Image (cartoon, rainbow, N blue to C red; front, side):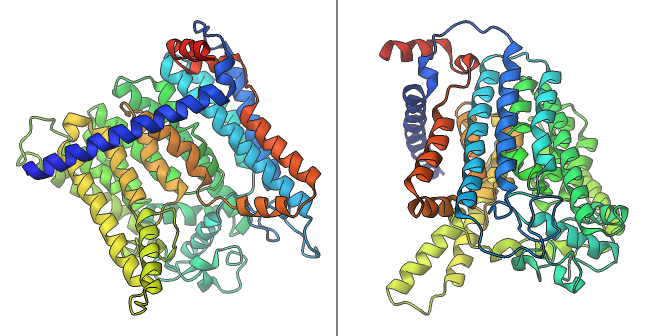
Length: 540
């Protein structure tokens, strides 16, 4: 144990040294190459400036929707009758315009860059200046949500899989045994990603119940089922906003800052509303459950965490942390057994009732790793496995398949995440148990077989109300880089620019460069501590 602790201390020192230099480098670049360094520092003048980030953020999101609404946009599904506008007609032929394609990509990437800049500066203002009226932030969230609500499903086709599974559920065809192609020639099947056509659902019974209910309410109309799922995710994001402010108050934190870091997070807006992913429902129930646990309502906390688990299984980690901390830090290990037994009863009843409502039992547990068929370099465990497999093949060891190497690296990744999470659970009452839970969820995402941007929202929303120290920097970094993970269009944009006329190249570069460097207003000066701005001005 002494040697393990010494190794852990050495790793910690290396991390602190590297992270400090990285964070300092980013701050130096922001001061030197962005408009922040040109402002004269002054005292904070109140919250009257909020209309400026509200308008800028709305403009950024509108630009994203406009760019994604071109009929040949790579950011959405281009099939007939999959949305109300911007889809090709059945009689549309011919090659798409390269100029329009590049314009579409530039609008989306320009909007993304502007949104990240606005949110980042607003988040920093909230960190330095507490006390904003939550009502104003709710209005900004409503304004920012409008473009995402009317946009076609963005950056992912998963919502069409949800709709098909809802159709299966409404006709009592088990999504735990069959994939959407079981529906045959149904219009629900055509938009489903072929990768998931024959894949059974890994989602919990409560989501299938909600999914099937929406399908029945919409009278089995595929497009309106997708709309219903989008509306469901909007309500889930509202639940996230409500739960995280309640959690922040219980932890003695500023609820305004937690709200901006969570409900107004670009990752949440773009992937949970824009992409209509069911992770919003899971995260909403989970954060409400944690807030109730902090307010010493453990039974209700376990119930809401159980509902979250009945949406997606990773929320079960929250159950373990709530049960472990129920009796407080002075409880012995033997005394902690009772909360786990009570939690087991609550979870069993919740999953049992929701399974009866859905009607398909517990088959979803067998499908939890069904997304393992996706091979992405964004997941470290998968990336290392593919790299090793390619190296082995280059060395002539063809008997070792990439699949077998991936099985090993993915298993090691999950075991590493489990080991770190157990350590965090054991020490959570000294480190802060809510914060430790958020870190555990992020570890399971980053070390899991597949890293999807919307998975990051699980832990980031919790850290929004509980982070400490440098975790704030990593929270911001993951939030502004996460939406770009796997984002289509970048390679096409570069290829299009290379083969386009110089005027088009100059225009695209000017737009993206202007979005990065254009001043956003005097309010951004309050996103840095005054002493840092003074040092920056003196150096320039």
